[in-house]
Length: 313
Image (cartoon, rainbow, N blue to C red; front, side, top):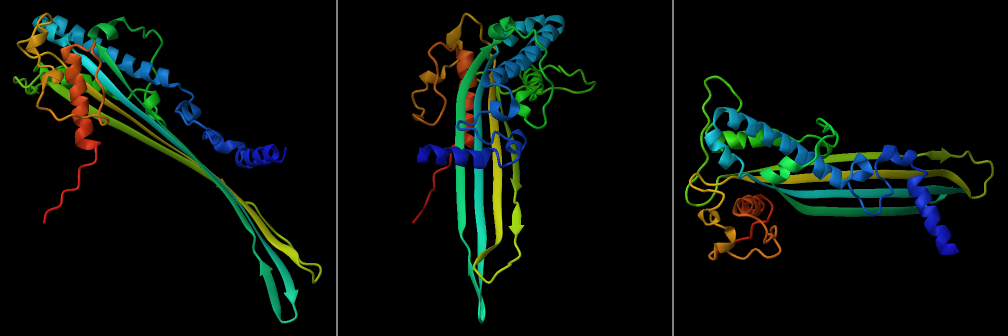
């Protein structure tokens, strides 16, 4: 019973003494997830981002069908890879201190007991989603997708539409934005593989709150007495949300029925093994989806994986 009471008192101190759990920071989350602070589940986050991509892809499809139907085949070969990292950290700090004083004949005797309880919980959720023109076209996006959310951007629109329009404009050498006098520049479509583009979009939201009530007592006797006492409580919630988006289309001389015309990353036998560092591939990916996956892998290699320390004698 003593252990149960101790745990109950500890939770009370962290979650109740701090006013209203500090305006919903997920202060008592054992397993921190975005839903604690945003009210939006991981599945809903993915759904909204995929719907944002669907709108952009279908808008581009309508534009090419009207202006350049001969390029629809390449546009419809698009493969999109989303690599998500949703990390949350919660810290709760509860401290108590006091000053016990006893007057002496020629001075003062002080005793300062202190007590602290510091808690940290952290969770990092990582997963990958793959899309193509067909999966986006049939995806149900009837519900209105929310606009930008500046507090927690990952739960709203994050700018994938601009990325997709820019990618198609560069890859297919067309001015999708319709600006007079502008001329797009094509991406490299050499035999090294399909043209790709990768964006790494990161969001960090850090919230904190604290309270420090204090009491001061006036001595009434010469005996030892409590002079001051204080209680300090704080809670911090930090969310780091990242999505790496890779897009690819077929090469200029490729066709949907000729998968061999697009080099598959699996066949690059000279590539160094990347076990444990990068995204794993599914055997069901088509060559264009694999190209988008490889572009994301290269992005992680370039910016996320720590570079080795090189020393010379």
